[in-house]
Image 1 (spheres, one colour):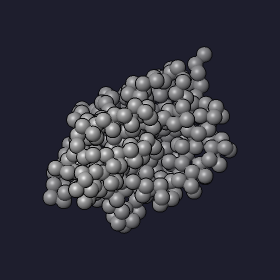
Image 2 (cartoon, one colour):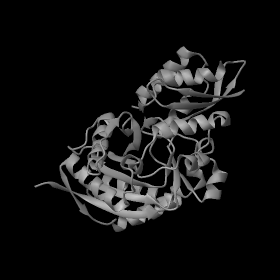
Image 3 (cartoon, one colour):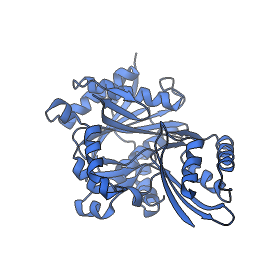
Length: 94
Length: 254
């Protein structure tokens, strides 16, 4: 199943998520995180996308995964945050 | 004695060359080969640049770009899509460890944007930095900015809008919903301004450039000395044109 969302992060930027997921298992197959936000270092957006594969599509699992990747890779978001990203992803399945 | 930084006036170039030069200066500066550098430039032909995290096909009407002779390119910095036509573009490259630049990213946006704000004062324009990455005058955007940090080096580039054709801009930018296109155009016309609009007359690039030169000197309390790209920078720029900015792989990356 494929889905897209557009979400204005509160006090932040416009997040666009493209999601391909397994409806039966409720798992992410493929994700593209796009928008006019800032991520430092930039290339870690791909690390985030890779680590989100096979993550369960519920807010708690997503937040936990996003926060752990941010911490492990010393990632800094500007105009985006873990909660906003989780929200953008959940909007794809609502 | 004031610290001396290099000033580059590289004139008008294609989108590919412009983005390759910014990256080449970053790499040369990270290796300690060139001093902190401020660069002023223009785009010919006009171009649309998208942020590192944006999708080209999602943001840009590529057919209309072709028709209107507008270049398109992905930046190495985040942020949004920008239509570069009548503007001064600046870039600044400086080591992260330099005492004049805040370690904190948001603070450093504020400081670098402060140089643009001071430059605008010399044109008689009162403006303020508006986080995250805008400069506004009378509530309207007159400058957009984007920063990356790579190889322990800060690169920030941004626009100083000299004039803006919102209708042309919207024929190149993709709008999510055609039905609200008119409203979007009106919103942007209400939100974006230009030097020409604020002052009611056209100011030449050279005058904007002189004002910005003073702005950077004042903000950082340094002296800008005009210089040229080093041989290594020219070589690196050529390499980045071929291997990065000129490739479909890069521009269609996301």
